[in-house]
Length: 398
Image 1 (cartoon, rainbow, N blue to C red):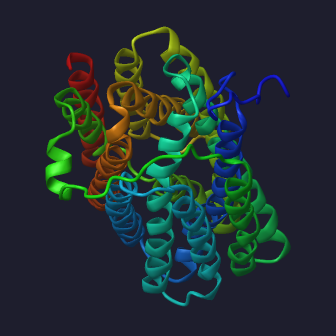
Image 2: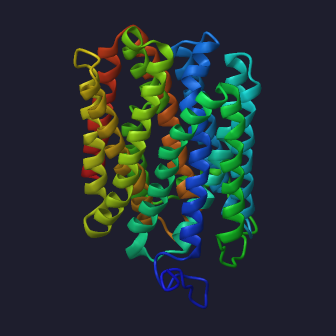
Image 3: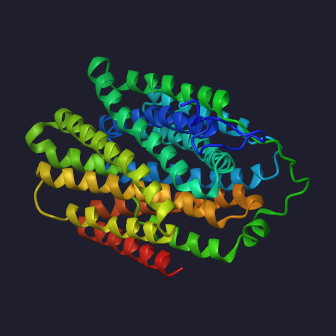
């Protein structure tokens, strides 16, 4: 391990797995364990408050939309800062505190406020994390570095629902949210302690955000168009948990159905963790856009399976498992492909723009798919299938 995390004289990596890559990965693990504890418990909590799937979709959509704005402005702003790292440390802390505050919520409006606040912090840290990860890694190792970060993130997402399930059974819903503060603050501490930032001179005067965005490479703009199109069908996983819970409630009861849905979600994240690193290795050996387009196309399969009749466990094993598989490709290879296209002086804005496009897609998908599902599951999943395949075609042809 000492050989793997050795650093060169200029702070760059002798080996791709250096202290910064490891620190970013551990921070992602703890942060995702924290907010996935809250996410896994959220559908049951909202049900206890009388909220519907449409309101859950609105909460997720508005939170993701606001997060996308935070990502965009964070990426733009950090290109002009001498030190980016403190903003990421603050972002981890804000998200942890906001998720813990759900323990005090008495209405779905208060859940919305807490979720939006937490997702502002999550959005602000994302472009900084990706930029520091890129600076610490050689281009030929981008896939593995981003794959490791996504794998650690998804490992935390695997542990989060299990911790939530244990905490809910031991202490109840509200204490589960409060306990999520512990791994959330650990993420902030790990990032502050391990991640190194190269010395850099800040840009004295940044052009306006619109002018900066227009100056991004044309190839990157085409890439963002494909990402946005596919992302318009990438609905929140909380909706998947809710639908599984609703499908099993008639025969299991609400409590047992919710617990089983959380276990399936933990399985989703286990597949996701394995998929992330595998996708990163594949992206370092094959054209990144081809790998990404394949992942987008795969997203249509679990959507089609959700339309199959019945509520059998085998059906949902496939839905959760294939969803984890394609999401590992999406999130890993998007970052690695972006790092390959972007010039160094545009990385903050570029990653911010990527995150903003993803956030805008999450807003559209969660709000639209959640609303459509309440009216017609066929219409909802047809929308997901169409956007996934269209995004795959656009990325493959760019």
